[in-house]
Image: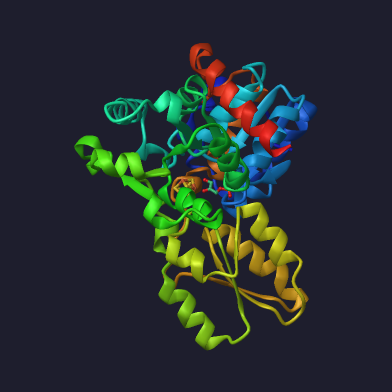
Length: 370
Ligand code: 13P
Ligand code: SF4
């Protein structure tokens, strides 16, 4: 078993020099030392070397529910920054939430910020009263202060697995929705609900009034923030056409962060958890094309191969989520060894003034899906 390190050896620089096997040994020893005080959560996009150490894996919704339920003193979140923030919010700051690498953000989440969303809200208010007519809905892939903005303006949070239920809830209260930061999840979900594309407006946050006229704002049912996921934008309708011509009878499944045309051409659309559940339920001889992050797809392909099910990645080029990839065994070993030594590194804490209204918007989401 790896020995507990001296404090002088607990810096990240020391760990970046360790190889994966040595880190594995340290991670196992630290897990044993911390026992039930520790819960490691792993998103499906994590690389294998990290994913294998997770106590629980899941999509964003499932992981936030796991975080809310655990009694563990330490939650080490192998995911990205907004997920760790959610874990801190839903546990009322009573647990110590750690993100092994603070640079593990989400480029889509970064496409919206509080200043830009406030500007958008005030620009809309030049045309109509948004607090009467517009429900702000933030995808969980967003900073905590945007969730707080929603909580303070009668709005709500959604994930990829409950976006439809959340939009139904929203439209039952106000006639329009401002959806940020992912235009694709908003568009794909609203279209499935029967809202035509002509009633959706893309809000270009780089332009005054989002690049829209007052008439367009008044006519829109869905106002879609012009954000997107850099990983999912790699998947193209032509990849699906190519697969269908090569594999007659093959099935296509995509994440709703994909472009509208990709989702329209897919047989199934849903969250990472939904993708896993659906493909795992297939029959020997089935062929799948999967439009989501590479680490998930590679693991699923390996898992299904012995059952005679083939799983293909949608893009011909390698596209991983580079921020999810930042969490490596070196950072995980570093954070765990520090916890064993009684030090906390990379704690994620949301200030109470933000956490309270953000929690209100998250609780509403959890009520809507229950
Ligand atoms: P889900 O795992 O919730 O489907 O979301 C995918 C994602 O992009 C996480 O950032
Ligand atoms: Fe963000 Fe896209 Fe990575 Fe998900 S896959 S964490 S949305 S950049």
